[in-house]
Length: 458
Image 1 (spheres, rainbow, N blue to C red):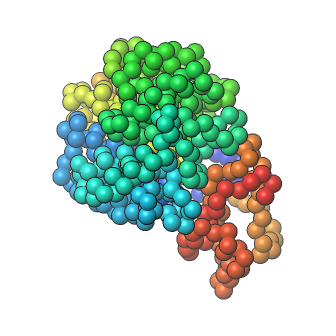
Image 2 (cartoon, one colour; image 1 turned 90 degrees about the vertical axis):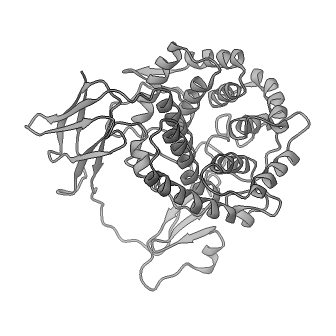
Image 3 (cartoon, rainbow, N blue to C red; image 1 turned 135 degrees about the vertical axis):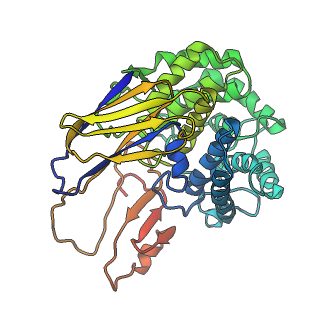
């Protein structure tokens, strides 16, 4: 038997009667994401990078279900429908030279990372939907044109990825750092990949941060270089943060895993940890000890998922779901069943049954005793994923406000990533003409503004 205590405590400023909680039980690590393919991350879908967060994970889910023989016609029809829509949407962000960027032709040039990401995703999606080969080949040609003689890549275009700006927040990148990304994104065969690997061989001894170390480990694992991968993983093991059976990594010194109901983990911690998991699972030879470490990583990652099976941001959702799907496929078993009991100190009780027929089913029940102390117990032998959801409304102090909105960036980096500013305009009000000059896109009715990077104190 396995058990896990759950403590639901109310925030001090919560409005009375606004709190709701529920528990979800699934027999599959991907079950929650499968049920919410179109809601993995609560973000607008009006730029090329955000659109891919809906596209790429669907491909990973389809690959996993197909490999484990769980793909039904109904699931395939629903998933491929999302893929077709995402494919057509992504073409809006294509440049005439074949590259892709965050805002398409509104940007001055294509982006190397996003273009490689699109190449990988479109290539994998061709098995499930029609993808015009020209959209892949045009992008590959553009990438080849931006590859340096050393095999590294010239950095092109703006990107709102939070941790490509390495070295303690300084916005400068070596060309080999982009090459690391390309190995993880491009098809594993071809002259483009071979030249990129030559670049990375020179980079192994120039690592300046743990994030790049994890990416390199994954890149060399994909390339089949067991010795280099193992050397990097040994270094990463020395920097692992372990607590309560969970393992994760962080680019900055961190305390052990939080026991709070909502720990507020950094997005980059999730992405970094997911890349380490991918490195362990992608090696040419995966040992029992590797799977033990992988289990600890999965335990931490699943604690970071949101209510829809996604994670905190665009990039960490893509990488983490890819890693979880790979782990789930490797540990999949058709046998086994389990009985899940949820009970409270005040007499609440609910029982769920998990078996082969209900493996992908997400079973839910309301937790009516909030605040409260609950205990989740699992009897049997099967994969069980349990998640507690919490909704509440916090009271806000009422105060007058003028019709002006000011914001600033005070982070540690020179510039921020993409800025989302939600302004609910009163009836009869519109944005001033000068304000529209800063806006890349506008979504109603809540007036959601997506702005470019903001400089410190701007």
